[in-house]
Image (cartoon, rainbow, N blue to C red; front, side, top):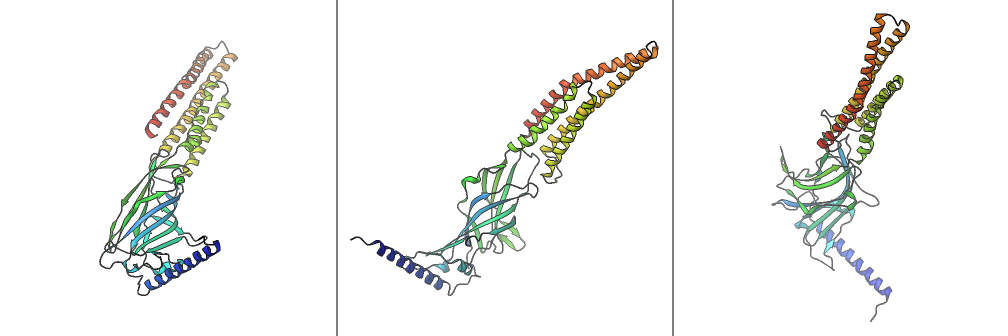
Amino acid sequence: MKIPRRMMRYLVGLLFLVTLSSSEQIFDNLMKNYDRQQPPKSLNATKVEIGLYVNNFHSLNEQKMDYSIDFYLRQSWNDPRLKFTPKNFVKMIRPKASDIDKLWLPDTFFRNEKAGKTHDITVPNRLLRIYSNGDVWFATRITATFSCPLHLQKFPFDTQVCSLMVESYGYTMDTMTYGWMGAGLAMDASVDHLPQFIIQDTQLSDCSVHYATGAYPCLKVDFKLQRIQGYYILQVFIPSILIVIVSWFGFWMNDAVTARVFLGLMTLLTMTTQTSSIRSMLPRVSYVKAIDVWMLLNMLYVFMALLETAIVTFLSKRAKTAHSNTEMIPLSPTNKDESENGNGMSKVAMKIDFISRILFPVSFLLYVIIYFSIYA
């Protein structure tokens, strides 16, 4: 016999109302003698299983040394006081959002959190389920910023490890312990590649700590992040190499003194500006970073090119002065000596330029090879 569609809808709606009414009745009965201030087990420690699902991982902030993530915190434990006999096919009850605070909840907090919030759009992003055997499953969506002490000695070829530590605020290990729920950590497929980092690996560990008031349970997740160098190669390394190469153009400008000086000053100022912009992106640390070594030696090459220009310009001017004196009084023995000295200085200036055309590119190429073999 085929049941009419309207009758089927009526029966489904009736079953839903009966189930909802039974769930509310069961929950009300459980709350009659329930004390949320007391832990589930008075004699033994309550084991709370923790699971994290990372929905979004924001980039690291080098200046503030922190990172932000959007994740779901899942907690599960057994509360014997919440056991109930299934009624009207009800084996699991889901309390309303306003009733969640009537239950005992783990006082979980994040040890290295700097700021955070729970989500309330469009409804409070909290879900709690109670099963007939007393198992409780509680999930919350959280966006938080965590501190991450960075080690930037090899920046921008560095690999960082950022942690997320889950700890109990007031319950010692005599009252509550932590354990991982299944795999412990799961991540959305889009989280692997960040704008500047790749999540190489994740490690789960125990970080329980002893304070003056007792031993407190703690779990830790370590995110191993490897920096992607593409941005720095395009925005730092290639432009700085080109600036250094431009500073060598003066070696072929023998007579253009003004142009050589202008070129040397321009490249030096450009390199200084680039160095300042990079330093503004990073915290003020006391140690030397790989990017500092790169910019410092590049600036040294540009300065040495400018210094070579000053030496050659000085010798060229002395040579021209000697030649002008011999043209005015050609028969003077003193002027003949000055003319010979002028020719000598002119040859020395040309020789310095010739050596610089070879020495600067070869030594710079060798420096680049050594630098990237050490840091990259």
